[in-house]
Amino acid sequence: MEGFIIALFVCMVLALISKYLSVPAIPFYILAGVILGKAGLGIVSSNEITHFFSEMGLIFLLFFMGLELKLERIIADPSKVLVSGLIGLTVDMGIGFISAYLLGFTLMESFIIGAAFYITSTAIVITSLVENRKLMMRETETIIWLMVFEDMVLIIILALLSSGNQNLILFFAKIALALGFMYVIAHYGKEFLISILDRDDELPILFTFAAVLSTASFALFLGIPETLMVIALGAALATTDPDAFEQHARPFKDVFLVLFFVFFGVTIDFSGNLNWTIIAIVCLLAIFSKLVSGMLIGLTIHGSAMSGVEIWTNTISRGEFSIALAVLYGSPLVGATIATMVIVTSIVGSFAAKYSTWMRRGIVSHSRKRALIHRPHTGR
Image (cartoon, rainbow, N blue to C red):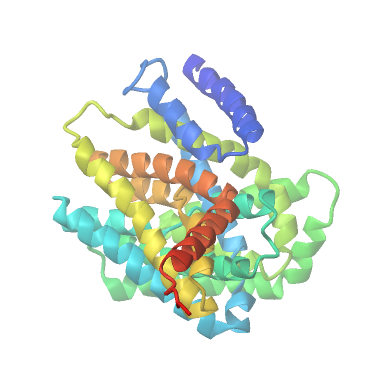
């Protein structure tokens, strides 16, 4: 219990520091866990209590992801969503998978690392866009499209990784049945749900908490992944009053998710047979892959390399979903690799997004100087 209290106190201090520096707190939480855990001082360890809170953090993170799935964004301009999304999927996941396999990881490990390469940190990206006052940029809408497309792909990845050796027809039939049940409840019980959310007592908070946990338990009973069902619950409830559900679930998500990151760091062991050269290469390629995909999307959607630079600087950061994949399906080696990648890319990404305007001006200025130098001189 003492370790749990220490972790909470350290998280509070790190949250204050990250807010003061205007950088994302996720890498700091992971680093705190590494320092306090088995790889560092060894004063905090993982147990049943911390495992429960960490699992709650993951569940409420995925519930929020479901609430943020706005299908109207895809319906409004499906071609641009599809084009930009497929470029990101092909480039980022392709580079991640191929490079990991060539560096000696197994096929499954390479797939997980490739998925972690692809999935951008929605929390860091949205926070960065707001804090850096970039919501009115023309590239912002494209970045939001990418986040929505990535969320859809993440659902498919979770379904593929969760299926295991089960009968696929029966597996997906149970998922379809559960999804249909939730959407029927959300559709025909919409007025009832809104009446609960409109109350000013403790009932809306209790209802939201109970709905998320009950859905996860029901999924385990059916033998289907609770991760998918919690996402689906969020998506179904988003058709009623998503803002109210976000308001009531946010306190649980914010606290539990912090503990999720910290105790993920606690469980990481960097003292094993790790090749830091390989991990460094993975981190560099993770930054490079977003540069390639960002440039291609900028040129394709906006016809501008500078737009590509802006998209790149705002999508470098990996975070919560990459860590979730490592926790759910990764080996200790994959966990350490993805943890390092998240720490590096989130720090680099936060500063790149903050100073992207300066970077774009510098590139334009350099290009103009080169053009002047190479301009042919005509004599009279």
